[in-house]
Image (cartoon, rainbow, N blue to C red; front, side):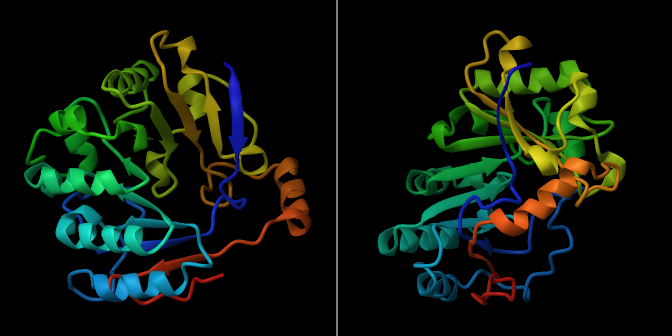
Length: 286
């Protein structure tokens, strides 16, 4: 296996603000990191207030990431917010989504949003829709695969494939997922270990029968050469691994201790904030 690079997401990547656009989502993924997000109150996103907050800190950040819940449930409001950001700032805008039914029913509006943003990350869960439904915890209301096929701006897309015990953990199945989405034109694919539910956690080393360096010390994002298994692969495959700080099944090493000590002297300053649907900047600003 050829390792191309390692990046530790605990290190500074970019100064950004995360917009929790809504607490709602039509899926019921048991491992969802936002499952306990109660939001502010049952309301539509207050675009005016959210943008006002972003605009007030635009000189302190470089990126805006819009997530939820599921931000694409409110496509009109999402379009309005993205348009305001792009017309009034120089910030990069990204969206994290599971592509709810609105993205299919209102796909012209959805595609207009894709025209404006800089990056878009989505989780198809599986290339077989029956299994994907089991992972989402609900029955799909439209043909996801057709939307994946026709989506524009695939160069902006990151396909996030979650490794899930009992649902997506066999090597051939994982490789079939990677090949399927690469064949659809997606060049940026990420395999993600779960840390939200330890009973669903599958170490990527187990799948590919390899030994990798500890993720906290050496990089929890590792790009690997997939051509070893998929000769036709023509994209970028990244492993997103969990570390001992978020998963009890992965233990700390001496290299991790050294990383913690050295970060005191070499860590870079950056800004990070969380904005909720009422536009309030929550007290996570640092």
